[in-house]
Length: 119
Length: 112
Image (cartoon, rainbow over all chains, first blue to last red; front, side, top):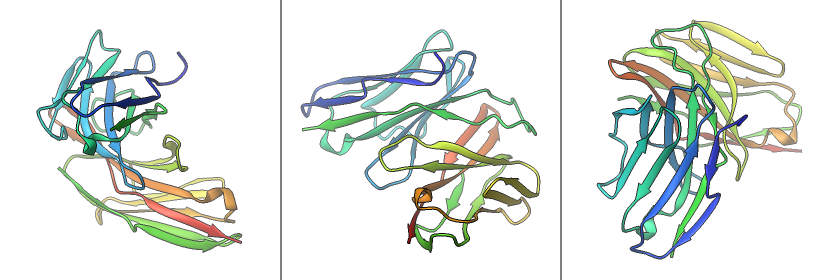
């Protein structure tokens, strides 16, 4: 596709259920990021993928959160046993990775996000 | 890790100029981005700085001083549609790749 695609766009789930969020990055983008944004707040970093590997998982809030990326493309973020405090917009972004210091702008492109509501 | 600080809110008048500051602390600096985010929408790219100096793009300009860990976004001839959050993001090179971390964003309100 032309841009970053996320699904579903909206998800309402009951407390305690598991949810899976999907991100289709721009073709050829090696770097993929997941962020979480609560209403009126900034972007909270969750996890970063370089290809299929996740060099930095430090942002995952708890062990209920996990993510994977396959084929250097699609990524899924899974939240187990959801809690009400998990309610937020989950944003995915992808970019070409400059592989070091670069004068070239390799901006991150964002998907429209998944709005998760845990009731 | 890194710290990125920017003001939480700013207010300005239509037609005026506003400067939004961002300070950061990081090792392995590898570029600074400014994004615009309207309420309920995804962030969109505005500007990129990796060398010191000013980058101008129409009504928007962005400045970087790497030695001071400082950047600003300058918006000229403000329009009502410029009311949005402005996010400063720093890319940091690590052994494992490039991290992209965002500040908390500055909510700009443009008044008539």
